[in-house]
Length: 278
Image 1 (cartoon, helix red, strand yellow):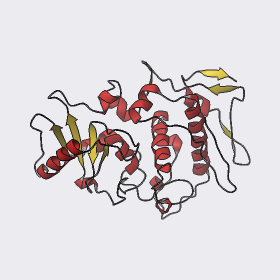
Image 2 (spheres, rainbow, N blue to C red):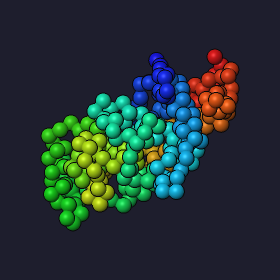
Image 3 (cartoon, one colour):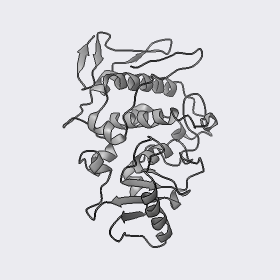
Image 4 (cartoon, helix red, strand yellow):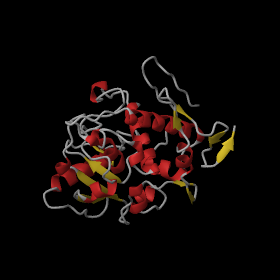
């Protein structure tokens, strides 16, 4: 059940159970409680953006405008930020301020995951066959192959099993490629050890099982191609989830007190993207 507590002087998110992975988010979409939490978060981000004052020495990219991205990309950002904020080991000093922005992101939030991945060397590892190793990365491949044999492989961002497309950081920690890249769009530190991550020393690990073609995030997301994953296209069941959330959010309004109201008071947005009456 969704819940929200408003503390004096500060906005609070609605806490809900989150999807276990980005793949699950994209294949199943959001349930009703998650929709409510997302709309609550996005409305707050709009208020923060409207009141942001960008000085001459500020980097505009450090200020988040939720309307500058596609609707699905904003949902992915909400998902990643929510997981980050729920990490009990996260040091609050990593935040720039109470808006929830992380300092010094490694990647530009507007850069797609696909473009970032395409700029990285890729190592393909198979438990039974020879693996492909780019020149100069033999030690990293061998180390990672040993890690695959010795550990279950938990993603430090979503706390679930790591997908077969993995991001190997410069400090030699591993997580789902999309999760780590999403994390590094808000800060530059490793989610495992908090050391600064250097893109030039990061590697993509592609796990290939049983001698077959490498399984990737595309396969984990129900056969969606990389173009769909890169643009954040989500599916609810076997049908593309319509952008009904965006239609409803456009009806939101900010009143004179800076609070967000709903454009349609008589309806709520259901988990399947249809408007349902109260």
